[in-house]
View (cartoon, rainbow, N blue to C red):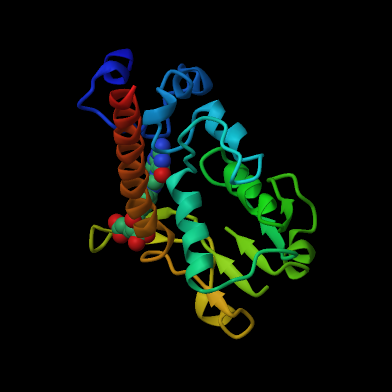
Length: 207
Ligand SMILES: Nc1nc(=O)c2c([nH]1)NC[C@@H]1CN(c3ccc(C(=O)N[C@@H](CCC(=O)O)C(=O)O)cc3)C=[N+]21
């Protein structure tokens, strides 16, 4: 990692999850140079999310590509975030935690749900946006295999999206929803890291 951090030809580093249990995730994320952390997993990037978007912690501020993708979807469909009740059915550091912070700095009211949450049905019914009723962002991935056809199929967490459309104004599909935009945002984050690198080089040259 240190070698990649120092390599001027490398602008972005992504640690593909999940990591083996024997490795300390936090330690590995924090080894990535903040300016090359294109999936926003470094502690500094998570900390930067807690402050308003215009006060930047380090020069480059990156949110994980799935979180950025979900924000992009909400913005594209002109969903107004201030005052919205969001039910976050995910507590991971790659989606639930950073996205909750990003949404709360944009004025949404977040309920974080875990496996231990009781009465999830009532909580989901009382909200405007459900991550993972009105707007449902499905970031679930389950791969099942059709043994007869030997084909893999990808499903989201929403069991019957067709029925949900009767009550919701927006439902993202799986496949074809959060997944592809995650990849696009990873490239966007990498391009942003490259632009930030160029800006730093130019200001160094001026001095
Ligand atoms: N540091 C890190 N960041 C991640 O963002 C990260 C990761 N590690 N580890 C693995 C998971 C998984 N992930 C997916 C991204 C795109 C699709 C995707 O595009 N899926 C297609 C379906 C593809 C198919 O049908 O085979 C879709 O939803 O349309 C899926 C899964 C990112 N992850």
